[in-house]
Amino acid sequence: MMRRLASAQGRHRDGRPASAVPHYTWDHQARAEAALLQITWPGWAVLYGTGSRLFHAIATWPTPEPLLLCDRTAEGLKAQMREAEMTTIARRWTLIETEADPETEIDRPQASGIS
Image 1 (cartoon, rainbow, N blue to C red):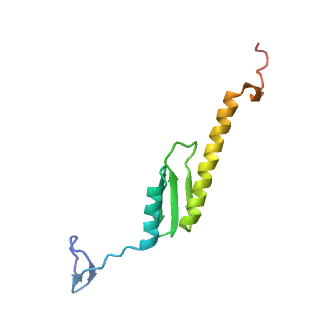
Image 2 (cartoon, one colour; image 1 turned 180 degrees about the horizontal axis):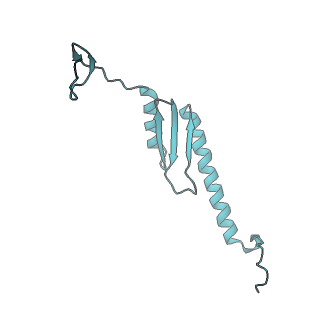
Image 3 (cartoon, helix red, strand yellow; image 1 turned 45 degrees about the vertical axis):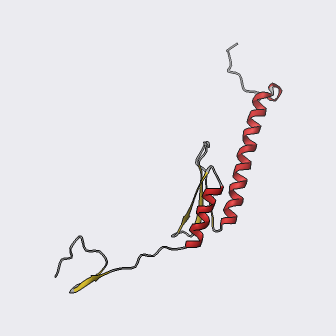
C-alpha cells in the first residue's frame, strides 16, 4: 500500500496524482444578511450557521446571564432582538424607579432576636 504525503492537498486516490478540490462557500445571501445585521444592530454579535441554517445573535452588553437568540429568518431574529432590548430597558427602569422611591420598598423579614 502506498503512503500519501502529509503535505499533499486535494482529492487523492491510490496510484493517481492529487487533483484540486473546489472551495465552496455556502449560503451567500444569508451570510450577507447576518453581516448587515451585525453592522446595523450595535450591541449584538450576529452570526449565520451554515450547518444549522439559523441566524444567531449574542448580546454584547452586560447581562445577568448570557443572552443568545436564534431564528430561521433575519426578520424573526430582528423581532427577537428588539423584544430583548425592550425587556432589558423595562427591567432597568423598574429597578431604577424601585431604588428611587422609598415607599415601594419591599418588606424584608427581620432576623429574630436582633434589634
